[in-house]
Image (cartoon, rainbow, N blue to C red):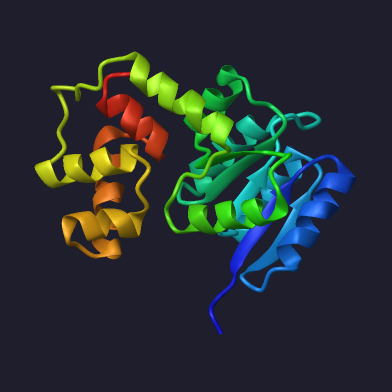
Length: 211
């Protein structure tokens, strides 16, 4: 049997939390590892449980979801976070992505789309609700996409980052460059190290001069 993708949920509204938990548990591809009503508990427990993906609300009582991601990412930089929120203004989107979120879904997203997005995220994608994706694309189109001349990346790493910035999955990058998915992951790890960043969005922003 194929190994299930483990998911943790951080959501203060009980009805929403239970609904999403039910959606995940109904799918054979996923397992709901844990749920939290606040970020404080999540900060303590997530590094211990190490779920594959975390569904994270932004507006939580006490510590915000964005602050929670920042704290957990310091301990577990490879952990994948999917924002799951009602907020769709540009400031919230960019703040969440800069903090280390890998995807951004609105709570009105249909159940089947949530599962598809979680799977895509686990496979190296950066799924976003259509409206959110348009905002991100608009942000990149506003400026000149000329790479930073001070970059220390190799030509292969630049190729990987260029494809990553276009939204390609790890496997798709591998197919494009005729290398394995494992090699793609190694290149991305080196890119993060060289640029001193923790996620895709930070790497793209820094390489293309948007610090």
